[in-house]
Image (tube, rainbow, N blue to C red; front, side, top):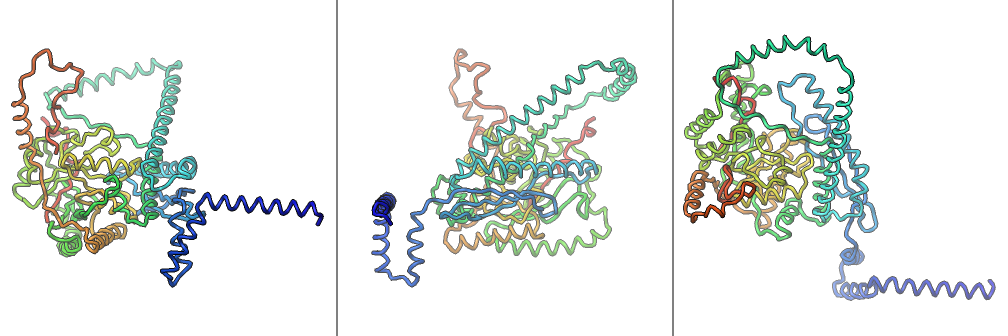
Length: 569
């Protein structure tokens, strides 16, 4: 080699040495090595390199999301649903951390027509396909390089993304509407319509005569809250990120969620929610046809552990199956005691009061009335709320609407059954359960209609401090998996000494609270007329607002039989 070439090589190697030294010095490598070697010498571990690997791992960068994969899978009843898998960059390597299967909630009625069933199946498939497009496309790019432990940031981005998609859908529908109006405004056969008008008028007059008798007004059904196609991607990703963060921190998901709800303040004890176990299912899909109730559920006594309560409930379930076996073989009329009996909302309240008086072991009614019957919800709460939980499930608003409105008393109730579906995010659940706790309402985590074998729902219930968990009967693999997870969490908490013993049921005396509110209002000094708020100001107390923050059995009522226009004269 020429002398000039050797000098150039030496200069290049010297420059590399200086760069390497600066690189290692800036990353404190010499200091870390010295500390590790000094500490290791005195410990003299059997696995030297394993010890050094563990020592240096605490200085590695936190894992970040590098890839999302969405898949179409089948739920517990063979219908399509969504699976989300999250990959992270961990110590410079791409690694699959966890996956979750989302429980879908689109529920088709038992008496639905074949056309409605086909439409529901198409809607479900369209929603899953749209969710896959989002996850494997734009959401994959949006969440890349984010830390899964930063749930608030992830949920904020997901919320913004969903809001943008909602606006895009509104714009699309508006364009469609304008195009339809433009098509209608074109020259059309208007005379043909007028030719049909006389017969239409006759029908109108005939109907008017038939309805001439004064009728008690029926509150119209509230419109169904729209569900954006593909929204299941938002809830699925939020839950998957939470589970990923828990896995990376080597923390159980329920504890990870409990820390989130309490702003990283480690709880000293956790309570395992009491299971609401379905004993009887009513309706067309069951052996009997009891019209009033969807299901009868049992709740184990509070003094029993979940394991003891489950064993007792299993024995009751076996006995009940033996009793029902002859009914299933042909004695059809055994459960049709209410067929043809229609009652008004006020009559329903009286009937429930009589029912609670006769059977005091009933400690909860789920959806006893339609959500539109607000006054009757207040009446039944005042009548039996001090002895029984009045729970809203289908009668409650969606989670996103409840979080947005910050009002859980429409209708007035003791608590809510919360189902993790669609665009619901983990941060929405923590906020809603805080709101329920602050107003002395109970939270119940419920399994959606499209169940899967994913047991994350149980961790959600424990971590968020739910009073009950509603999983269905003690049968079928996807349900038993969740019950087993509940038992495992109870055993783990007991072993760690962090299991809080069962608490007695605390019911809210709504009538007493209303009287207290009236007394407080009466005690207020009179307000001068000039100081009255304007009509646009916030009232001191809304008409239906609660002025004060607020083993038995459960009846889940069938909304389809609660109201019928023909019951009014």
